[in-house]
Length: 142
Image (cartoon, rainbow, N blue to C red; front, top):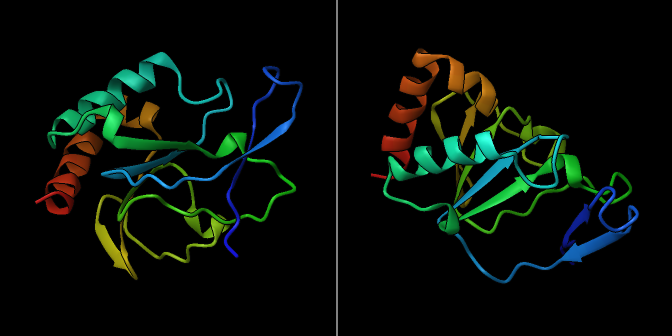
């Protein structure tokens, strides 16, 4: 049996855990770590929306997974509701996906394609990282 995503919503629900069973698939899964908010802060959301618009996707077509909200007692495994996965600053090997990928390079593994990138706040401040991300996205979404 596969485990559903176990998510803790700090302060919102007095740290109760809610299990989310995803049946829906998305164009892309976005993995990030942001301990300042439940999902993603406004500045990062805007940057992520612009990044996805560059490959003609809206944020509504993406599943954003904030690993900071996972229940630490749940099995450390991520199940992606998409064939395309972009990780912003999260080492996916900690979540059951053994990857040895160079940053910003598309890495196919089993039924998924991965891009490992720096955290969104670092990409926002570095033009070279934006260019590298764009090149990887063009390859992934072409």
